[in-house]
Length: 252
Ligand SMILES: Nc1ncnc2c1ncn2[C@@H]1O[C@H](COP(=O)(O)OP(=O)(O)OP(=O)(O)O)[C@@H](O)[C@H]1O
Image (cartoon, rainbow, N blue to C red; front, side, top):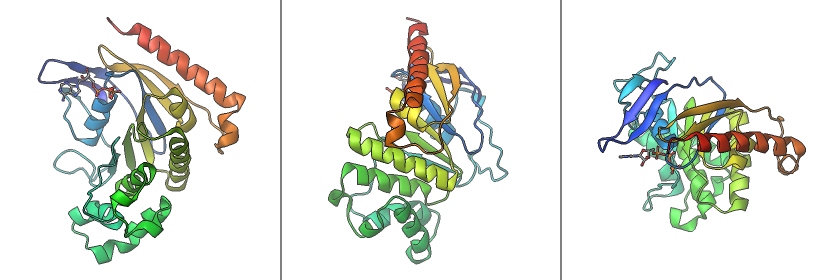
């Protein structure tokens, strides 16, 4: 993103001069107070909203008519947004169906993603039969079924209980290690961002912009032991200090 400004039709300046370079294989968290423009930035990257000025540039040669790399972006929203009338298989098949791939031809890819999120045995279940965490796993499988290079996640676990959230954090890390997909993850949580990220972009509000960009050094193996380690505590402290300072810097 280069010098991106976003002004909504009601006059709200949601982003001011936001620039961000994202490198292949990174796990970036966008962290900041409510209203600092995290979701707006993510939606602009996804092509779900246009910048008022500035540019979003892609290295890919497969740019479509909307200026986005074809099939290279997956999006996971805070709500799982599953079709209640369709099975788990049908929901994960959807992006391929929209791309014209039949159920039979898509079966292997759908099942591979369901195995990846531990839901292969639930392919024929309906969303109403699943827990909140399982629904979110289906949503992640659906985002990955087109094998995107970039996975955008907008507070995907905010509505889940702490235990499920920690489990899904571990699952997303395992998935990131396995696929090496580039992830941009929006969160309000210092602890979640410090656990997951290779880099944390702290944003400030009024106007929404990047406040600071923190590389996070992480052990390869992150688990329950890491969660109670001094290393993790120190990372949380660094991130928390940066967030506090971003909040204090906001123009009142
Ligand atoms: N469609 C819209 N029309 C007008 N204003 C909007 C619109 N969407 C967002 N905004 C405003 O733009 C600013 C940034 O909103 P955004 O949702 O991107 O922030 P956020 O950091 O993701 O917030 P939260 O953490 O609470 O989800 C806010 O002031 C919000 O009220």
